[in-house]
Length: 288
Length: 170
Image (cartoon, rainbow over all chains, first blue to last red; front, side, top):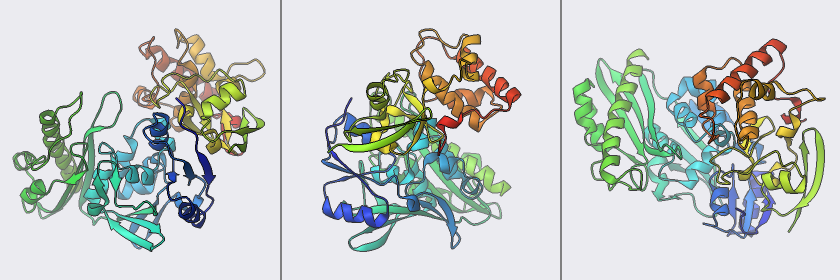
């Protein structure tokens, strides 16, 4: 399969990219290309122009700043998966990155590209919601910060505007005593999340002080399982209590349906994986 | 508008004018005539088109040739040196790691990435590493055995899994 013809522009700096985007407002931004190129090959989209961000070194890398973990938008899944810093401070992100696609896809695909693409079955959305990450976008109006809860606006739609570029993702350092886990039921053929659950749990004196649960794959956009969180805060997170709370994982959600998983089955998986993710995070919180 | 790109493939620099929509796999096969890299699914699923680009295994059906401008690429044609098989090729030969052979070039190049990251891989690491490579003949067991064979050979010789030609700055 061959994409329709387009003009190609390589950007070598963020300023370069912003200038090109002003001149070519209809252009598509190419990061790792592992969502964009398949769509162009299938001619789901046929952009007239493509601006390649892949050579902007400043947008690629992992650093610590002000107690936060800051990832450039072009940081690849493999860089995240293999980073000892991410593994030690944000294992939930490490786990999610390591379960995306396959080796080759993780070598090329980027966190920024994935987030902006906003596939409802992508893995990162659950993680950025559960960790309350912040995304930075830069456009003609300057720089702005988008909290995770406002980021995903619809199926393959994000709050990053057409004239903006997502530049970095900021994860604040989670306090000591926090346990985190990402659990996923992958589609057996595509590897995408039929259901993916990110859980962040903090315990204090055997009670759950704080819990956040992000769920992807189930609904048109990833969401926080608020009903589950409310049922768990202040509880001892005993197995029976977690199971009872997790029964609310798909409350108020109209689950996606496809040939592999109908709505009822997906909701069921959401409940099962929410329970497992919270229990896994709880175990790690106890050891933390 | 065509663009001029320079891509180093198996140690040799090639300069060509290409359409931006030309995929790397077509550049390798049709522009350079290196048909050892196969096109299987053409949808980023099967891994038959896997090559090593700047030290990273990539599916060349999902990379534009213009993205590879300036890159160093290793294809299956670059594995054997002076008539001697690379240990991964030897492994597939000795352990009967193929039947029809269509997936084999992609399997071998992905295997090099697995071995670079896990010089003494467990069976689990090999099998997980092959997530993105489909074989419709063998049931994978002989492929796993082939990669284990190559791991032993590479350990004995102390050679890096990925030859210089596939690494950055080659």
